[in-house]
Length: 255
Image 1 (cartoon, helix red, strand yellow):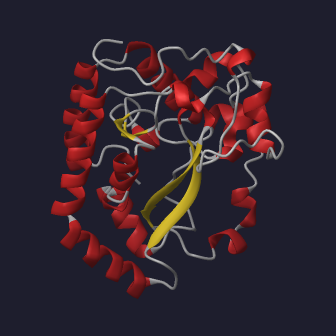
Image 2 (cartoon, rainbow, N blue to C red):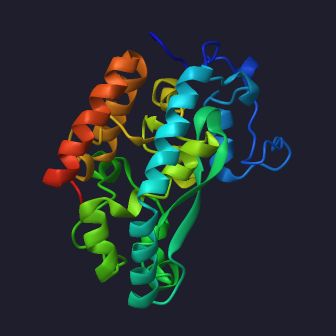
């Protein structure tokens, strides 16, 4: 790639490079979850220390993310109060997500679901799909019963993603890249080609987000993610960031 690279020596098909680390960098080889075993089986694990980003690009991302957090702080405080007042539960939502090279990190956003959604709708958290279902699977739908009234308009406006910029400050995410996956879905990344998605840091926005976002199926989103990994450049990142603002204003695929 021209101008930047997450991991120049990373080969997802080479089991000799494999290693999984949790979000604290601790080796998990002896305590693998089912999701992490999927990474092992696909030959997708690699040495986390090999994933390096040029200092100038990380500085740019850090300044941009920090500026957004600072400028939007009053808005975020108001959003947090509205969430707390709207439904019981915390204002922020934390979740383990899969980052570059299979490293788990603590993802953060504003809570848009009921705090007890997993208890009320456990069937929506099984992530067990037949080959036919995975072909047409869409994660976000207008009829999702778990979404709170406040969460619905926050998703439509993308305001719930503001805390993602903290993940950029910490280096777990990039401004642009595939959206971070949940570990439970790794079983459906069943080929080395699909696992190439994890060769780069996940992003706040990406090629899929300006190409349909929530209207895309799981496989359509993955195709855009892989296209980004294959063709990414600084100029592509800048183009995606610019188009993201337009997509947010038009609410294209946001629900």
